[in-house]
Structure formats: structure tokens, C-alpha cells
Length: 314
Image 1 (tube, one colour):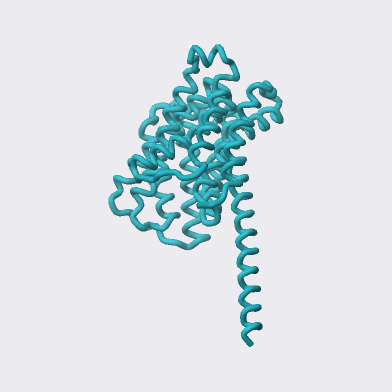
Image 2 (image 1 turned 45 degrees about the vertical axis):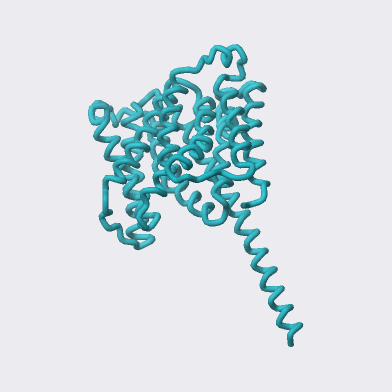
């Protein structure tokens, strides 16, 4: 009887281990999808940027995204959305996100998607900094070395693989503008945990999106009113709906799915894929392939992902 009980217990344990392995692989696949959707937003955004102002584009994107998420929560998930306590928290978070998205599309009108994508990969390192400042989180093991390695690859891509430009610290205005937005996004990532007061994740996200959209609309009401919405080319509307549905609702779902199955450090690491995926999208769209030197910098950022993905969990 004892042997039978022990055998059954061992089989149950093996089944749980197998299921855990499957769940982790699904988590990695979810974050690969997340990185792909984010990278697509840079390429599509660069196509829409010449035809519409950054504030007007994001106002439309958030209006559609908020309506879409509200309908899903109300009629699909059937969850209530009670008015939050201390709504000032969402104004702070929404302000940071509004600043990030507006600077992103300002930058896309001034520099290449690959370069802005490289700036975006500095976010994990900045998030680690704000995590320490706001939450006293101290990264362990290989987290900081891999973040620094990936950051070096990002800097190389930002400078277009040009040693002379790096020596002169010759950074374009678009990169500087977007870097300021990325700093805001990195602060947001830590403040989400600090400001959460036990609200359901979906409700917390909905009120943050609503605050972001309202602040963008208030800031850019003149640009929104001056936009000839009926004359916008189809690529602009494709970009708006892509951003509203896929990089709002889609990435939210994938991120939450993966966060429940992978350590935070490994979820964070998938940001490193952004420049490489943008290079691939830009080449497939016929916008030209990056130079081998720039690709080398993108490969260096992937090394940061590989180190974190393969490192033991702590």
C-alpha cells in the first residue's frame, strides 16, 4: 500500500512539473507575441506619422481602445467598473503614459523606427532604477549585467553603429524626445505597483487608459479640432485601429498571461527583441534593411534576453 501511494504521489508530482513546463513555454510564446505587436506599432506608426499629428493620433487610438476594452469588460467578462478611490493616482499614471505615447509619435516623425525601438529597449534598465527608488527592489543575479549588455547594444543602434557619432555624443532630437518619454514609461511601471490598492487588474487598467486618453485629448484639443479626419489616408486608420486594439487590449492580455507564468525579470527581457523585430518589419515593408553594423548592435541586445531567459529563476 505504501509503495502504491508513493508511486501515485510521484506520478502526480511529475504531472505537475510537466504542466509547469508547458505553462512556462506558453508564457514565453505570449511574450514573443507581445514583442512582435509592440514592434509592429513602431513601423505602422512611422507610416502614419506624416499624415496626422501625434496628439490627434493618440487621442483617436485611446478613444477606440477605451471603448473596446469597456465593451469587453462589460459584455464579455461581465465585470463591474466601480469608480475608483483616490482618482488622482490615475491622473499621475495617465499623465506619464500620455507623455510617453505623444513623444513616441513625435520621434517617429523625426527619426527611424529602428532608432526609436533601440531607445525603447533602455526601458528595462530605467525600470530597474525606478524600482529601487520607489519600491526598494534590488535586482539579483544576472539581471543587471544582462540589462547593461542589452543597453550597450541599444546605444550602438541609436548611434547607427558610428564610432565618430558616439564619440561626439551626436544624438538626434527625435531620440532625445523619445528617451524622455521612455523615462516616463519606466517610472509608470514602478508606480503601478505602488499606487495599486487592491483593485482588479482589468479595472485598474481601464481607469489608467481612460485617464491617459482624457489627458491627451485635453492637451491636444486644438490639434484634434484642426485635423481633417475625413481626408486621412487609409494607412493612418489602419495604424489607429492597430494601436487601439492590438497594442492596447492585445498586449495587455499577453502581458498579464505571461506575468502569471514567468518571473518578472524574464517578462521584462522581451523588450530587447524590439529593435531586431523592427529591422525585420522595415525590411519586409520595403524600407530597406539595416546595415550589418546596426544589426550587430541588435544582436547584442538579444544576448541580454538569452542570458535572462536561460538563467535559473531566483
